[in-house]
Image (cartoon, rainbow, N blue to C red; front, top):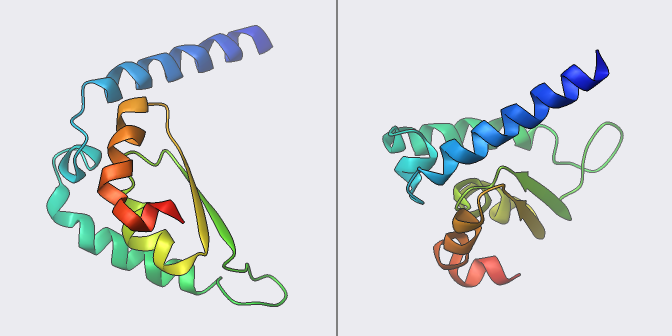
Length: 110
């Protein structure tokens, strides 16, 4: 059973990598053609996160964040960098991370 799960996982990530390599490194590409909803998505996510961004029990600080599946940095730029001191990005698609450097501009250097 375990080897089947691992093989399915490998296949899943392989298919995902193939899919994302075909997507343009744009906000519209990151949102599957729905770039016009980016502000709605970001505002809702900001409201959600702000409930947890305080010091104290059951709260998280604002020293660092990790953007998994960061793409070109849409979430990093407009949501995480304004809220966190440091943001690290990871993505399976190297072209997206390369584009993120220009998309984030000077803000991405901190």
